[in-house]
Length: 117
Length: 113
Image (cartoon, rainbow over all chains, first blue to last red):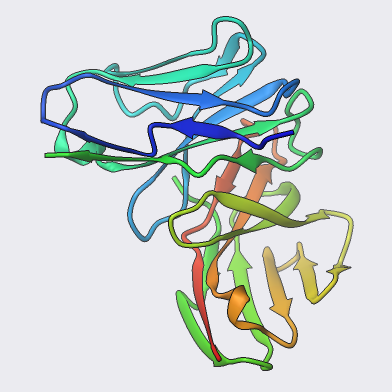
């Protein structure tokens, strides 16, 4: 069916505001990733879910960043008290299988472009 | 942190020419993947080459991997204007560390009609 869907497509937030970014992965995909992509750079890993379990959150830049996937499908990335350095594109990706580095590729959404003013 | 380093950072060619992009990485890997990103869009998987493979083809794409030099190259033959995009290599750690996919900074390819 449809690919990975992310909303909103664009988000402008005033510094200090909280934001919530949504990711709808491909139905049935077990693995879900969040990446942050600054302008002109490659994606940087933030966090990884296997079903509802958050197995790796080593890339979250601070405790202002929080991600959840409570029912093992839709995921939300929340950023509290946004700062200008949070401005970036946030990409969600999913993969059919339990993630191992030697198996299936990632399917990416088109991202949410966050601008903090 | 980003492991892969693509070279060149930007490449501009004429339609019909071949485009070659290189990627170098630092640690041992299980596989290396190449992705394409059109402006304002997400990444699209192009090809995966395993650490025990040396060359792989997919349509107009040819990927090579040299684990002794920790490098890979992506060749796009007979380029088209629609190939204009940024290309990223991504590696998965094979050294027992986290298996997350780590991307390079990318090569921005422009194919002029």
